[in-house]
Image (cartoon, rainbow, N blue to C red; front, top):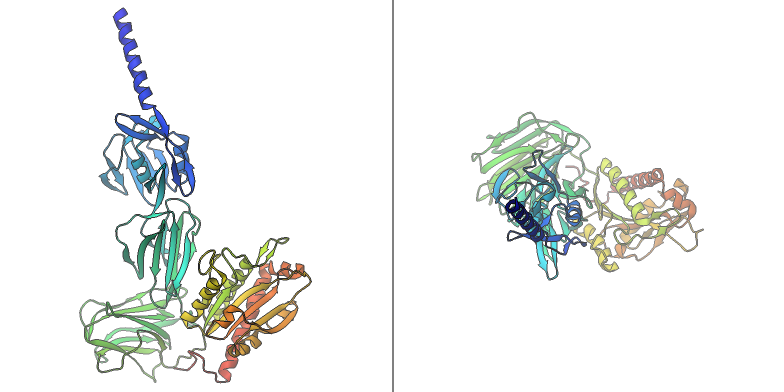
Length: 572
């Protein structure tokens, strides 16, 4: 009996010593997007790790988009996240990641409440990359490659995030959108890739991932959702206006007698082309053409085309038929229309010496098509770090009101057949947050000047220390601005129950540095109790947008009636 007691005490003592060794801890400092965590470090069996029951570890997991759970039999630990999914078995040197086995960067040890994990393994499971910074480890969320999806019938790129953060978008050019992911690292190996029609370029700079998305010519990207959530959804839409009429296609394919591609629709239509010199690919977008039941595709050379295909790139409500053709070396292209047959277009491949070279990017229309639309840039005043004037009693910010009116006006103008660009489509600075006023204002002018806009309208709310000041006003600077300003003078004011401030000759920066007719519209005084209350009403903001849209349409009609030389108005 005494021998058994000694043996039992020895076993208990050994277990106690082992537990003490495994529980020998020290705090480690981990930082994730500015938040600090202090998990206790365990040392056991020559390995170092963190208990998965440690409240600090659970806090860290909770700050990511990954969720942790055990299988019903307690043999597998699941990490389910938007960036990656992984399955871990205690003690295994392998891990299953997105359905494939691979060597594990660290081990899972133990099960249930007694389970702990080596930091490298946990960081990988949470899609975080650790960087040692002296007295702490900085965990940086991984940014994965965008995934192509179809959302509500439209193509989009979905970028899942390992942790909720605010993505910072900037429009570098009309066709290029930059997404900045602060405090993140790139998870992929290729730095450039082509996803559908979008060229993606990745770089890392000053502790952030920069993702440049370059969209096809005549198309522009837009963030549809998720700037401050757990994913970013980026779509792209045509920068040319939707057609007034949808046409059925009655003939399509290669015509041997015409030595070219033939497109026959039931009526005249516009088309927009781009030629990529590096790939020798000609792309022609034809808005308003609904694709037929079968679309011709040729993978064999025909008449100077190495290959070609037709495919739809629009939506059911706004169809766009696209032709893509790869030209053989030594060949150019030529568009040929039949004056007697509206809606008929030939695209012929020719020897480059036979015809004059066309512009690399351009727009035209088939015989009989008349366009009276222009490109207009709407500039919602202020935004991002600049709220503009503030009515604290009503809780209203100028930047919110100007954006809301601009978005409403854009939708109305698109229905009228305009091409519309916005200097900003959400609450942000056009240049960068905290930029000097001159830089921010020039960035707004650049959107208009670089796009070749026909008109520029900057939307604002007025303010004064005297709360009795009221009324709308239209501001102009260049002589070219005056006619546009006059056309908008009575769009607001008394017609909407506001005071009428009339026309003002002012040297605002955006009026002095834009190359086209431009006006600055002070819709009403946000500092006035009555007008501020009206501006806070969505129905009233819709009336402002409708009045401006109607006045612009009348202005353009008047210009055409006077025979003004405006882009795109000539019958074709």
